Length: 330
Image 1 (cartoon, helix red, strand yellow):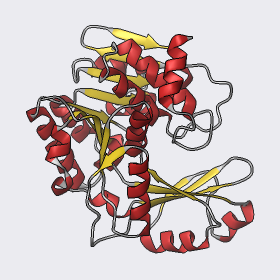
Image 2 (cartoon, helix red, strand yellow):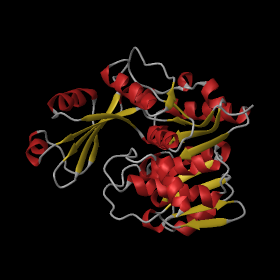
Image 3 (cartoon, one colour):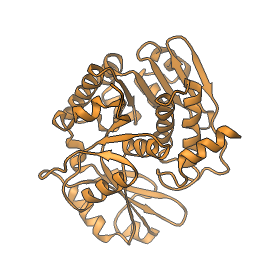
Image 4 (cartoon, one colour):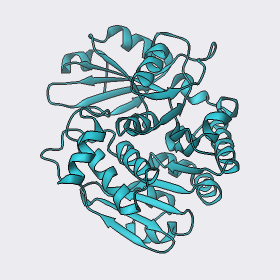
């Protein structure tokens, strides 16, 4: 049966709240400048109430990726848990407005919607306070078999892997996808999360994953080595495709039979690397679901990543469909 979606993402449904701030505000509220800190719900409400006026946009790694797929002209869906509160409505509306199918019903109980409160100072430093809220309560019951079965590729976000129920949800999503004859992709997301759950991640990759995304630090953490080339050799055969990003060095695409090195796309000035990996994944997944070979798909990924790092935020400022068309004509 033909796929209804190119990609269905599964991840932490987070609302990014961005506001201009200054050092005195950071000092008053005891915020460690330039870092990301996990906070509890009480602290999240306290800081949210004290924030200057700002911008609220749906966020989270897999959400960034599916929005990128939609910006490329692809068909994208998303599974992630929000509460039926103000920020849950923001997430719901924003994702749908970006062209992503979002069916997960808001939770009527539990913690409130996850948020990342981002304080941007004049020196371009971003100080982030993150409350994971109800997003981390995703369970197998939240996996929509209809959406997974209708997607050519299901894309799992490694950030979500900490809670036991989320691990079960990943396995269920992978089993549903494979039963429908579809593919499953995973992004490792974070080397510290990989370090905490290395054995489980290895089992997941070898038993359920067709396409693996990782940066240098993440793939090194998975195979407990400081040698990128050694890690790239070890991942061969553990999944069909490993797309390994290396910042300004570009990317390496590893399959069972070959290795392709893809250069980074030139960018006039790197402003903010937030979301670079998410948008590389968007371009790569869009490419392979639209008939591109692996180097061609990786180049689309590199183009998308170059757009994101040229400005603040993890959402495209230029329609990626138009940008890719222009770059391939150059």
